[in-house]
Image (tube, rainbow, N blue to C red; front, side, top):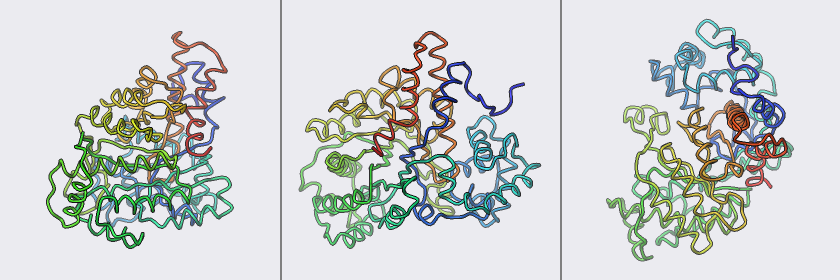
Length: 469
């Protein structure tokens, strides 16, 4: 009988096993996009129990708990961390078939050495006690958990208003010699012109930059001042969360000024005006990223906060998001071309939440290669609902067949959890299975130097070249 999550899990050919165990398994991790709290890294945060560490910020787990019938009091409510852990332990067997079942056991096994133990209602007490003993030791604080997984870099996600004091503190510490923590510029709130808090946000930006924001150019100047602050603190990338991308009109400065003023006054804007404003802002920021030689990431396609009940009682980003199903190809090509036509397109990574858009992403990326940069525009890894076996395999196969898998910057956690890094192992096993099957099927030569280099690049070196070297 095949053992669950055994040593050769997913590795179904001899070549896949060799590639994983000899090449991929021990490579460091460059996790260039996540949502870890910088303060917890800099302060080397400690947790009292697994319930807090595992469940306080992980909306993936919240989502499956709700689906399995756990009351909100035992997910995000006032129940104790122990009761929340017990609730999760009870429902985890129900997640069989969902990647949560694999991820959770890999986390228990890789961090806590509980190999072979399955979490359920019967084992919850023993696992709770075993993890309690571990969490009491210094190596299970935040930095120790990252080092345990050989994490070399984490790219946090930060608002332009952030002081970056925790990044500065950490970069000055001895620990930064082995682990780099760099900020990522995420100006979504500056682009949400129809949002209720837009005027208040710009007031804070004005105060921070001593830059009155009356015109569109004023807004750009203020944001670029903050971008300079970010790059001075090691920023390697910017990130934009885009629910909907449209082929907006190209407006004059006077028109953009008028829209900005209307947004600051809380006036209703047409969807055309709002999208035109956003795309103009994205265009100017993209050009600035190119000048600063930082990577632009576009996360396209979530439909967020769909449950009014959860939004009211729990808050934003609490596990009530889904995929958009809107057209993408024309507006995406249009905005990238506007930067590319003047040679102002930065290195770019594109992510689509709708997996049916993967071919659009890959073929769009192929349109804008050049400048002597390998994979200058990337088809980013399978994202969010898609970072499961079928989703990742489909994304990589489409990238391989329509583009170049060899230049792929690989996996990231996109997570708020310090225990999420075994997802890199999950990905590495899968990419080794894909390439191993190519060899077994006669689709790739059994050329060890060629295959080893490709796997090492996808799992580590390509990301390292983009975000560290």
